[in-house]
Image 1 (cartoon, helix red, strand yellow):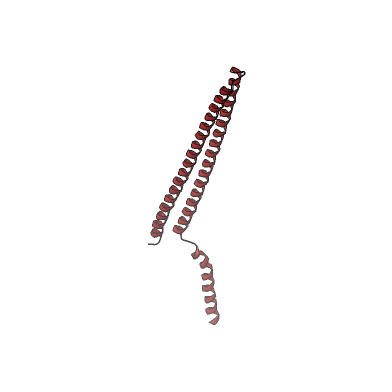
Image 2 (cartoon, one colour):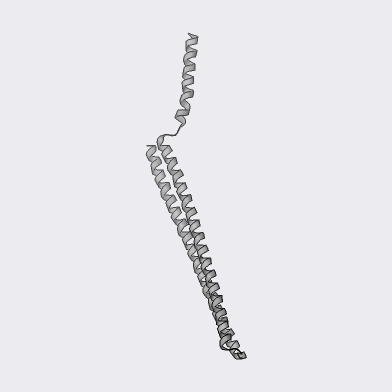
Length: 156
């Protein structure tokens, strides 16, 4: 009789040990919530990476455009100098001074234009970053609310 009780107790204990890992698995509803959370975070991470890549590409394009504009300006200045010297093989001091002042004014205007373009580009980049962060925050809040509602539905 004692052996039967011991055998029954061992069987109950063994069945409890076998059933414990199965019952510790999250219910399907919880698993779905976890997968949704992982997918959302992966999507947010991918969006951030794409935004950074887009910003970097815009920065590179802007700098390349600025570099090309500077090269074109310097080439134009050199051509104007060459044309001035060709038209005036022996310019007077006043002609030289006037030409030099004209070139100086053009260079100052070009630098001012570049400075304004750089400021506008930086502001555009900052505005895009702020808008992206706000969009990410809004998506995160919406996801949290959706998850909260789903969790409530899981545990009535």
